[in-house]
Length: 94
Image (cartoon, rainbow, N blue to C red; front, side, top):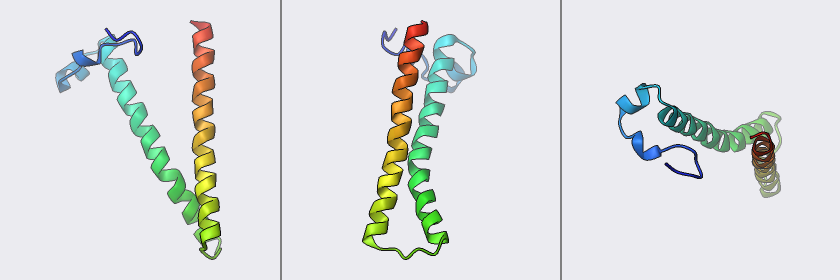
């Protein structure tokens, strides 16, 4: 069992393992879904911000592109800080 993750990911190697409701496999599946959502957000937010700027009729310049990129980075960074805070808060309750 992995001490840092709290579940044995190596035990969930087939589709049948994910179908069975066991603590280790259900946590592994939840972790995979959560990462999928995270990576989707990382892809979506810069595209969304760029489309929002374009919809406002703002001319695309290197300065505007840099501002959109920094805003996307800031959004992702705030989410990362929230994850760290949430993890620390959860550790205090355990």
